[in-house]
Length: 222
Image (tube, rainbow, N blue to C red; front, side, top):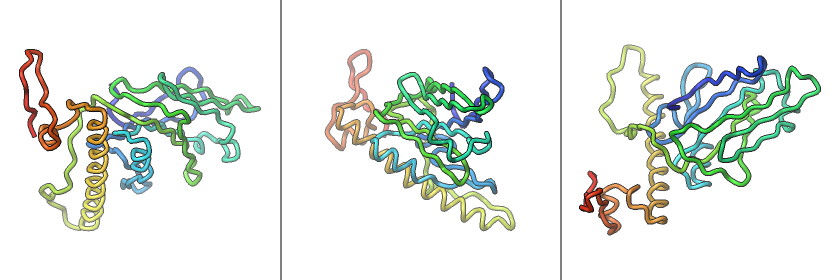
């Protein structure tokens, strides 16, 4: 089961670009952020925009480190990128076989995706990374609902700037999760999927409570 950022080693050929996989769903570690050179994490607003565009609950992202692989920016447009129900495919044919690659990245078994007609891939030229993104419509991950309004952590001497930075990051993540939760609720209401709603939401919108296998009505906890 895939649960977090994972380094994928392509063993079939000795020379392949490094691949990083990340599941972005609210409450999952390191979701909707990326790491800077100084070790700090920063919000990636393009991931939130992606969720709004496709009305999805999360994003499955595959990052290909092309610059570290030695591929020039002018060669990126020649990469063949595609995605289907089985996974993400990347292929590059070069005059020199040393830079050619053919990669297939399957989806983790604990997510359900909806592959767009024209899958998106973004090349970040400043760092030489190709980001391939697929909408997540459902998952079975164990997540911890994020709440920035929790009891503040005790700091250490000289750590004020770090605490302020982390508080700002957590507040933005809190707002991001609230927006994505609204998208999930709207989708559940549209599809009349009461099981995806909380007890409070079913009560608020006048939906029938869930039933157990004995046919008895069960009110889920708020």
